[in-house]
Image (cartoon, rainbow, N blue to C red; front, side, top):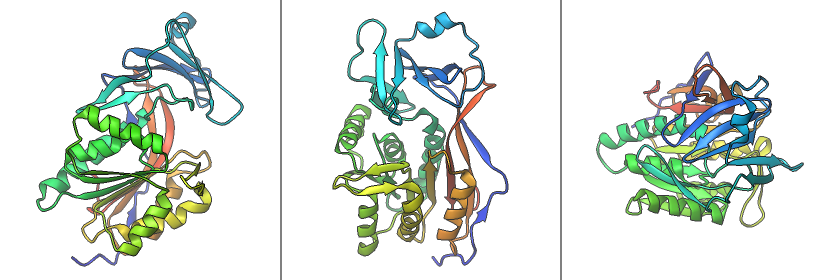
Length: 312
């Protein structure tokens, strides 16, 4: 199939992809620079500077939380304070058919990012459509895959997934999540490696994928000391990922949490790197919505290319 010579169309307006609560997660309340959330059977309080408004629930409702994260001077670092008995190291959570472990990590999150549920739903739809078209399972590359929830969502939907993360611990956790989900028999390759190094090698090999997820941190280090800086290194990596897309590629998803970036900037980058492929790029932010449904917290920015020219 010949590729289109058209430049991808960029959506004129930003889109807010709102994640609402589900059985194992809820944003209960927020305000005063914090958010009160439920993760399975535990309620937690975490810092969130964007919450400039006043909490709706009374203070005693917040103080009843099972765990509170106290930040340190180091970015995202700190420690947890627990009310009563210290919880187990892990406990089971789920999203649809996917099961994964919750963990109180040293970096304020709980081993997954709930706002990404909006992306999981979209990826699930895209992979299912590609798988139902027949032929071999669509090949998908998940870079900076962390604990693997997105990888498992796509594997369950029918994709052959390559999951890459520089952290040996994160990949081990992802494998545990696969076992918990009963997906050990699915075609998932678990790779501990620097994402940029892996992609460079795949380009040299002539490998291709029908879908790619790129969810880099603002700053990071590879297993051999490689340094990653989002603003300096993302353009090269996005270009390499564009070269890995097959002629029948369906999507490329780019997500970033850096404060100085925007969905519009990510969309512009993808449009440049995907010139000649046609399709459509939509962009905006991922947001968590409170249980009442009238307040939301913007958590990250995204741009997503679809070869179909529209999103399902």
